[in-house]
Length: 113
Ligand code: 5GP
Ligand code: ZN
Image 1 (tube, rainbow, N blue to C red):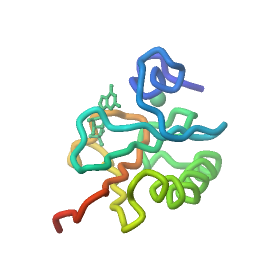
Image 2: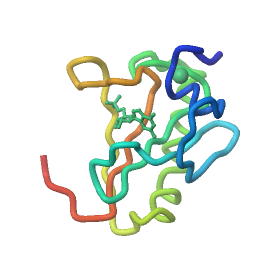
Image 3: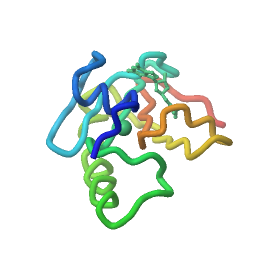
Image 4: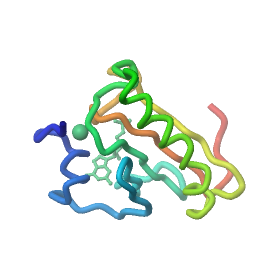
């Protein structure tokens, strides 16, 4: 189920510490260690899968759950005025950690890109 070599699986298991802001049975949200905005959170499924493009019917349920929860989590963590969601898919996008994660960026007016 989880990948013993995966950094984010280690964060889920508690093997690597993180600043958690939300957790339930399907997902975890924690602060990015190198924030790119005043608020920079990472929302991840508790079940390991590498890429958004690997999504199947089972993992789609996890993605649906995460996307349903993000609005209230963002609001409670300083992003009531808006936020940006980013998924880096694969090498050209610079995906470093091959465990699906949604970046939640906000807490300030973000630059357009
Ligand atoms: P990616 O480039 O794969 O989309 O994003 C990976 C993110 O994970 C980066 O923003 C990076 O700062 C963050 N990150 C890498 N290692 C750690 C860690 O050990 N703890 C936390 N909280 N974030 C990490
Ligand atoms: Zn993983």
